[in-house]
Image (cartoon, rainbow, N blue to C red):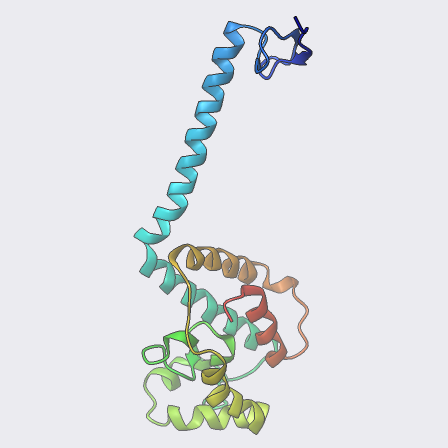
Length: 206
């Protein structure tokens, strides 16, 4: 009869002489404790996986809207970093600053989170001024030139034709952008266009 090797008990850590090839613990008491511990770990792991899938599904719209708010905030942070005025009228901001979308969200869902599509504007210009649609492209041209205006106006639509994000991904992106905004002061940025590309790459939606 082949003598079995000794091994360390998975529960208490004591070294013992195995009596069975697959024996993991030194005795009955340790076997019970070890089995119970493994059962609890397995149950927790399964619940964590279920919770991760369920939570975003329950709050999918809520998280999508919150992600939009955080992306808008990031766009405003970039423009504030470079002391840029309203993209529309060129004036300093009043109390409320919007992250204004060049391509509106309603008809361009696939571009809603792209930072090149979002620039800071006074709330009045963004929400109420009838000249907003004309002055926004003029503002981009004056600030960044014709090539960038062409990119925002047409290039974004050609480059990104759909937005493929499931509920769990939206939730993860939300946590990431919140972290970026919390730590925004730690970033060293060179110019607002490059900064938008840089953060788009980190967020990894586009």
